Image (cartoon, rainbow, N blue to C red; front, side):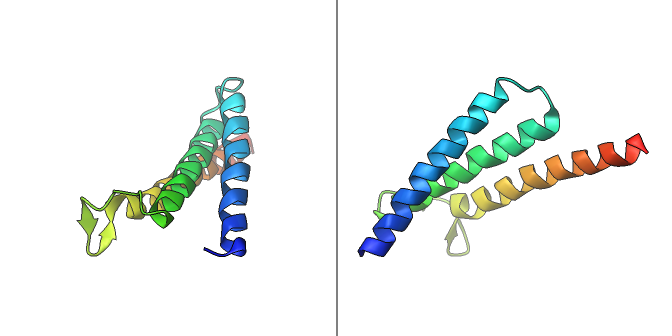
Length: 100
């Protein structure tokens, strides 16, 4: 592993941890469903980062269930993150149209 890849992994882990920490702090202050979905999406994104780093180091172990040749967890995490974001944005759009 070269220094560029190491810097990339460390920066993703640190920035992801900060974003997740702040998201959890916000979660305790808000009860808005749209914000809670965005926060959940941010947490799932960090889980995805940690999972990919573990796979880089060979400690992923998520190859029990496969979809074709792709481990199911590697398939589901990015989709789940986007589903949370799409749901949150849809709720926000619906609220904007109801105000008018």
